[in-house]
Image (cartoon, rainbow, N blue to C red; front, top):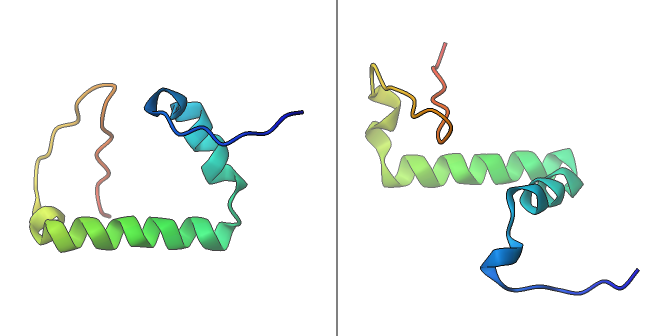
Length: 66
């Protein structure tokens, strides 16, 4: 199989991103998730205080903190 590196946005499908993420060891997955969480909280610290947030069907899934 010929492997190559592709750089176009048209090559960044959800399936290819999922395969890449699944190829990471669990420790790296957790590190990425923590990094994303820190980035979101740094840019919008009030996000954890939002109440009654409505989900947009098919686009965003809103998780509620228990």
